[in-house]
Image (cartoon, rainbow, N blue to C red; front, top):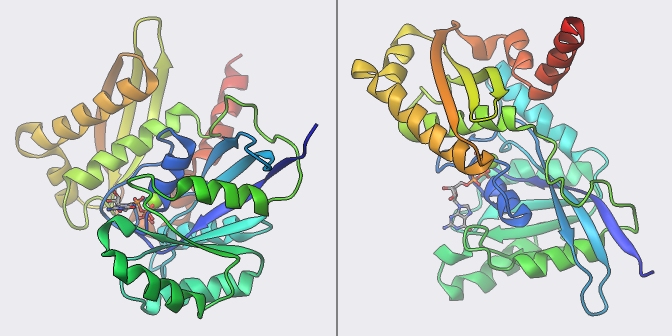
Length: 314
Ligand SMILES: Nc1nc2c(ncn2[C@@H]2O[C@H](COP(=O)(O)OP(=O)(O)OP(=O)(O)O)[C@@H](O)[C@H]2O)c(=O)[nH]1
Ligand SMILES: [Mg+2]
């Protein structure tokens, strides 16, 4: 038996760098939502990649953690998001620092680099979105970044076009220690469909609504029932003000209908079942400043409460 390599690898970077796009591309399934807007991801998302042995290289399993974009928080929600980043940095085998190669180095990058340096440990730098930059710009960029930190590897990629990912996977496997298979071959995430459904609705809100509305929105699944012929899903969209509620519902309910239809179509594709989706909109003034409310949004916490409720009902 040849050696098997495995370990925990966190994807860290500024908002919009392409972390979630990379996670989905490596896992080969949609586990995280992706939009063109910064601060799309709000909690850490686990994805598993199984890598076959190749010439002279062992097989392995990479347990990836996608994280919210590193930023200076200005609300309880922001603080919670940054806590998810700090948790993802703790005790990992490898960190993938991903940067948007089309953006100039700035204060935000300095902040992330500083965080990485303080954490210590092995870091790969991924220069993402290279499909958008002229080839001659790549070498100076590589040189520039190589002076900023002693990265174990610097790898240019396009998460969107899926280029450079084979080289990345091989380098990650080589950097990981020998270890067990943490997840069975067919398990590629720990996030139940119920919570992916909430994320899909949030993604459609991010795309459909402008300015502050998506950031003031949170989605909670009230019911997720798999029946023989369809999956019944009821969800509440929380926002902070009556004006936001009016926008989310739209004239004659058009906005809510658009969000509902696009969410349902995507859920049907991903879950492979017909979906009956009902959406409600509720106002909870200033929920982003409520630590309690923000903590209750955590799906891991909701899952615990659901299992307590179920065991009481039995
Ligand atoms: N052209 C191009 N676009 C990309 C690439 N990777 C990501 N994007 C786009 O960049 C935007 C942000 O991608 P995300 O994956 O949501 O970025 P993120 O780092 O997870 O962002 P947050 O969750 O907000 O921190 C989306 O519009 C992606 O389609 C890439 O390699 N090339
Ligand atoms: Mg993301």
